[in-house]
Amino acid sequence: MIYVTGERLQPPHVRLASFDRRWRGLDPAQVHDYLDRVADELERLRRELTTANTEAERIRQGLRQWQSRHKSCHHAPNGRWPR
Image (tube, rainbow, N blue to C red; front, side):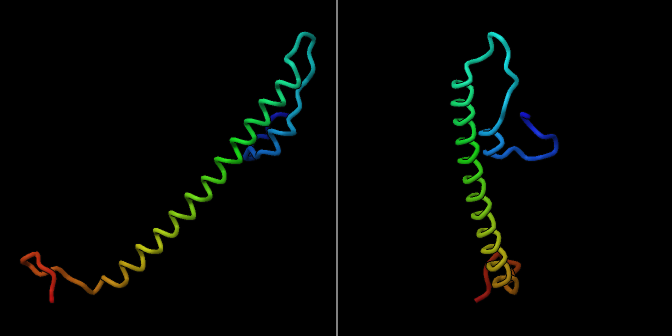
């Protein structure tokens, strides 16, 4: 089985993929080496995505806190901040 429809592709799916054997087919060692490289890259990208999502959430929370602290501040008609 190469890919289950509706399921997200995970590194173990790539590493454990199996293919039908054919006469004059591809070199199984080369296929598995390549699949290992693909799985490694998939793992790296998933880690980067997790890091990016964590950072984005930290920034969102910081923005919410800043907005809460400054919602009572109003610009004067002349464009200057009140003192």
